[in-house]
Image (cartoon, rainbow, N blue to C red):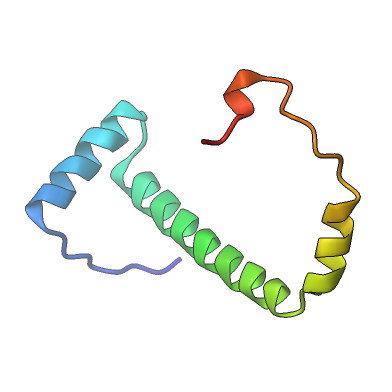
Length: 80
């Protein structure tokens, strides 16, 4: 396992202390989880961008043409 000295602005450190306490996690657990979540988000974005480059827009539009044009069943599903 590696170690890294991390310098944080006081406001960020105070927020991290507060949240880690609320989550019953150590500061180390909080930072490791936060870093893992950020890395996961970046890797997911990279994967989606890579997949989007290979997208066939014409095929997508043909598939969308087969979807019935009906109103949503639930009022909360309506986008204004």
